[in-house]
Amino acid sequence: MTMNEPFVKIDLHGMTQEQAVKAIDKAIASAGPAVYHLQLIHGYNRGTSLRSMIQDWYRYEPKVKRIMPGDNPGITVLVLKELY
Image 1 (tube, helix red, strand yellow):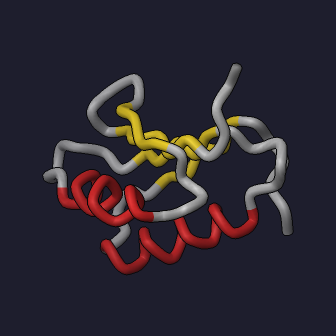
Image 2 (tube, helix red, strand yellow):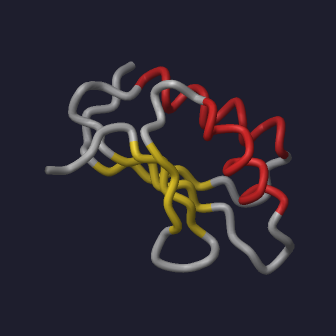
Image 3 (cartoon, one colour):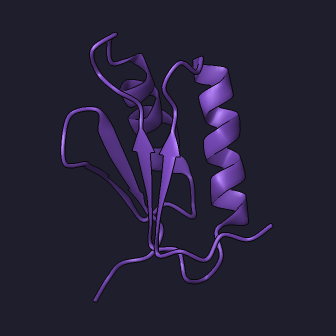
């Protein structure tokens, strides 16, 4: 199944780091050519372990052009394709 929305939201609330990695990897693998951003909603009230893991792990992912903060501290955005 290929995702073709330009901005895809993935809710990671309540997931362990291992579960979050599986969900993010699956989203990256199924992202079609129309997908620009994966908006990862991880929350921040219960700590920042998911946010830290995302920033550390996915900066080495070849399909991720860059990582940027979202609209609030509970969101991280993986940029797969730049908007020009």
